[in-house]
Image (cartoon, rainbow, N blue to C red; front, side, top):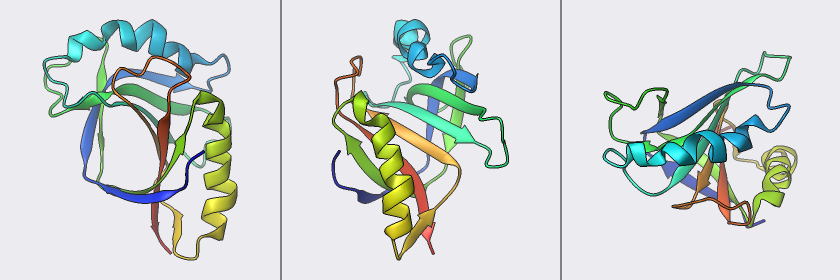
Length: 155
Protein backbone atom coordinates (compact mmCIF):
# COMPACT_ATOMS: atom_id res chain seq x y z
CA UNK A 1 0.00 0.00 0.00
CA UNK A 2 1.32 3.40 -0.96
CA UNK A 3 1.00 6.63 1.01
CA UNK A 4 -2.25 8.62 0.80
CA UNK A 5 -2.27 11.77 -1.32
CA UNK A 6 -4.89 14.44 -2.04
CA UNK A 7 -5.83 14.91 -5.70
CA UNK A 8 -8.31 17.27 -7.36
CA UNK A 9 -9.79 15.97 -10.56
CA UNK A 10 -11.99 17.78 -13.11
CA UNK A 11 -15.33 16.34 -14.16
CA UNK A 12 -15.15 13.43 -16.59
CA UNK A 13 -17.37 10.80 -18.19
CA UNK A 14 -16.89 7.03 -17.95
CA UNK A 15 -18.50 4.64 -20.43
CA UNK A 16 -18.59 0.88 -20.20
CA UNK A 17 -20.46 -2.05 -18.68
CA UNK A 18 -22.91 -1.69 -15.78
CA UNK A 19 -23.71 -3.93 -12.80
CA UNK A 20 -26.18 -3.51 -9.94
CA UNK A 21 -26.24 -5.95 -7.05
CA UNK A 22 -24.41 -7.15 -3.96
CA UNK A 23 -21.39 -8.77 -5.65
CA UNK A 24 -21.96 -11.99 -3.73
CA UNK A 25 -20.23 -14.07 -6.40
CA UNK A 26 -17.50 -11.59 -7.49
CA UNK A 27 -19.63 -10.36 -10.38
CA UNK A 28 -17.67 -7.09 -10.54
CA UNK A 29 -14.35 -8.85 -11.09
CA UNK A 30 -15.94 -11.18 -13.64
CA UNK A 31 -17.23 -8.18 -15.60
CA UNK A 32 -13.68 -7.21 -16.51
CA UNK A 33 -12.81 -10.48 -18.26
CA UNK A 34 -16.24 -11.61 -19.40
CA UNK A 35 -18.01 -8.40 -20.37
CA UNK A 36 -15.79 -5.33 -20.65
CA UNK A 37 -12.32 -6.29 -21.89
CA UNK A 38 -13.67 -8.33 -24.83
CA UNK A 39 -15.61 -5.21 -25.93
CA UNK A 40 -13.16 -2.42 -25.07
CA UNK A 41 -12.18 -2.10 -28.73
CA UNK A 42 -15.69 -0.86 -29.48
CA UNK A 43 -14.79 2.34 -27.59
CA UNK A 44 -11.49 2.89 -29.43
CA UNK A 45 -12.79 5.78 -31.52
CA UNK A 46 -14.11 7.78 -28.56
CA UNK A 47 -11.79 6.74 -25.75
CA UNK A 48 -9.92 9.65 -24.14
CA UNK A 49 -6.94 7.77 -22.63
CA UNK A 50 -5.75 4.31 -21.82
CA UNK A 51 -6.67 4.56 -18.14
CA UNK A 52 -9.55 2.31 -17.05
CA UNK A 53 -11.97 2.77 -14.18
CA UNK A 54 -14.18 0.84 -11.83
CA UNK A 55 -16.72 3.28 -10.39
CA UNK A 56 -18.89 2.35 -7.41
CA UNK A 57 -22.01 4.30 -6.44
CA UNK A 58 -23.86 3.38 -3.30
CA UNK A 59 -26.78 4.66 -1.30
CA UNK A 60 -25.85 5.02 2.39
CA UNK A 61 -29.46 4.25 3.35
CA UNK A 62 -29.40 0.93 1.52
CA UNK A 63 -29.19 -1.72 4.21
CA UNK A 64 -29.06 -4.79 1.93
CA UNK A 65 -25.59 -4.05 0.51
CA UNK A 66 -26.67 -3.40 -3.07
CA UNK A 67 -24.57 -0.95 -5.11
CA UNK A 68 -23.93 0.08 -8.70
CA UNK A 69 -20.66 -0.58 -10.52
CA UNK A 70 -19.44 0.70 -13.86
CA UNK A 71 -16.28 -0.67 -15.44
CA UNK A 72 -15.12 1.53 -18.26
CA UNK A 73 -12.91 4.17 -19.82
CA UNK A 74 -13.09 7.94 -20.08
CA UNK A 75 -14.98 9.23 -23.11
CA UNK A 76 -15.64 12.83 -24.19
CA UNK A 77 -19.32 12.30 -25.01
CA UNK A 78 -21.80 9.49 -24.70
CA UNK A 79 -24.07 10.19 -27.65
CA UNK A 80 -23.24 7.04 -29.57
CA UNK A 81 -22.23 4.25 -27.24
CA UNK A 82 -22.11 0.64 -28.37
CA UNK A 83 -25.22 -1.42 -27.55
CA UNK A 84 -25.33 -2.57 -23.94
CA UNK A 85 -22.96 0.13 -22.67
CA UNK A 86 -23.82 3.07 -20.42
CA UNK A 87 -22.04 6.21 -19.25
CA UNK A 88 -21.85 8.13 -16.00
CA UNK A 89 -20.79 11.72 -15.53
CA UNK A 90 -18.36 12.00 -12.63
CA UNK A 91 -18.36 15.52 -11.14
CA UNK A 92 -15.20 17.48 -10.40
CA UNK A 93 -14.06 16.59 -6.91
CA UNK A 94 -11.21 16.22 -4.45
CA UNK A 95 -10.09 12.69 -3.57
CA UNK A 96 -7.92 10.90 -1.11
CA UNK A 97 -5.95 8.51 -3.33
CA UNK A 98 -4.16 5.44 -2.02
CA UNK A 99 -2.28 3.11 -4.33
CA UNK A 100 -2.46 -0.65 -4.11
CA UNK A 101 0.50 -2.70 -5.31
CA UNK A 102 -1.79 -5.48 -6.52
CA UNK A 103 -5.35 -6.71 -6.12
CA UNK A 104 -4.63 -8.46 -2.81
CA UNK A 105 -4.50 -4.94 -1.28
CA UNK A 106 -7.98 -3.97 -2.50
CA UNK A 107 -9.75 -4.61 0.83
CA UNK A 108 -6.90 -3.38 3.04
CA UNK A 109 -6.70 -0.06 1.14
CA UNK A 110 -10.44 0.54 1.58
CA UNK A 111 -10.16 -0.39 5.26
CA UNK A 112 -7.20 1.96 5.70
CA UNK A 113 -9.07 4.91 4.17
CA UNK A 114 -12.30 4.23 6.08
CA UNK A 115 -10.89 3.13 9.45
CA UNK A 116 -7.59 5.04 9.73
CA UNK A 117 -7.05 7.87 7.29
CA UNK A 118 -10.49 9.53 7.49
CA UNK A 119 -10.91 9.24 11.29
CA UNK A 120 -7.40 10.62 11.85
CA UNK A 121 -7.76 13.53 9.41
CA UNK A 122 -8.35 16.87 11.12
CA UNK A 123 -9.10 18.52 7.77
CA UNK A 124 -11.05 16.03 5.63
CA UNK A 125 -14.19 13.88 5.80
CA UNK A 126 -15.91 11.54 3.37
CA UNK A 127 -17.54 13.28 0.43
CA UNK A 128 -20.14 11.86 -1.95
CA UNK A 129 -20.96 8.14 -1.98
CA UNK A 130 -18.69 7.24 -4.84
CA UNK A 131 -15.47 5.28 -5.08
CA UNK A 132 -13.24 5.18 -8.13
CA UNK A 133 -10.71 2.48 -8.94
CA UNK A 134 -8.12 3.87 -11.39
CA UNK A 135 -6.33 1.20 -13.41
CA UNK A 136 -3.37 1.68 -15.76
CA UNK A 137 -3.77 1.34 -19.52
CA UNK A 138 -4.32 -2.23 -20.63
CA UNK A 139 -4.97 -3.39 -17.07
CA UNK A 140 -5.64 -7.09 -17.28
CA UNK A 141 -3.82 -8.70 -14.37
CA UNK A 142 -4.71 -8.71 -10.68
CA UNK A 143 -0.96 -8.38 -10.02
CA UNK A 144 -0.77 -4.81 -11.41
CA UNK A 145 -0.71 -1.67 -9.26
CA UNK A 146 -3.72 0.67 -9.26
CA UNK A 147 -5.24 3.54 -7.24
CA UNK A 148 -8.34 3.71 -5.08
CA UNK A 149 -9.93 7.17 -4.87
CA UNK A 150 -12.49 8.31 -2.29
CA UNK A 151 -14.15 11.73 -2.65
CA UNK A 152 -13.47 13.96 0.33
CA UNK A 153 -14.53 17.43 1.51
CA UNK A 154 -13.24 19.82 4.11
CA UNK A 155 -14.73 19.46 7.58
